[in-house]
Length: 129
Image 1: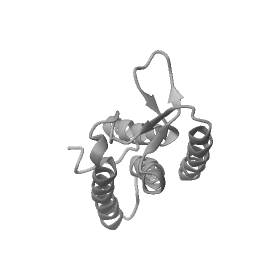
Image 2: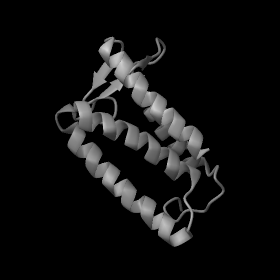
Image 3: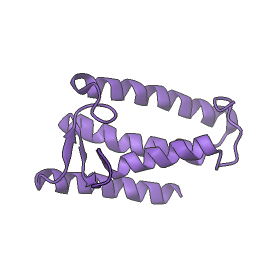
Image 4: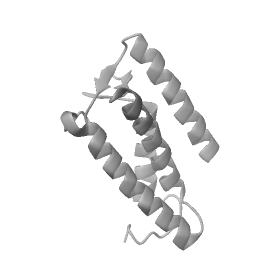
């Protein structure tokens, strides 16, 4: 599953470059849904750092990483790479029924969060209790 996530991450990075240069989609300088656009990079880095600390805590304590942590980490890496290169994320999936746009890294993060909330991975996490 992680290899599939890594493939999707690479695909997302390529698609963001292609769509950015073709001006298809929207630039997102903010964090989530464009919120706090002036400090999007700083907030993203802080949140990602906190997540990485939790990620390695789980790895040390349980000697394995759950699916949801891996998906959230891959999606976060995809968005952080783009923020470090361009200062923003390019959202290129725009559906007419939704009032916002997103990218594949956002989908990885959402699937990871949903699997955590629903307990799909079968692990009992102390943060979930």
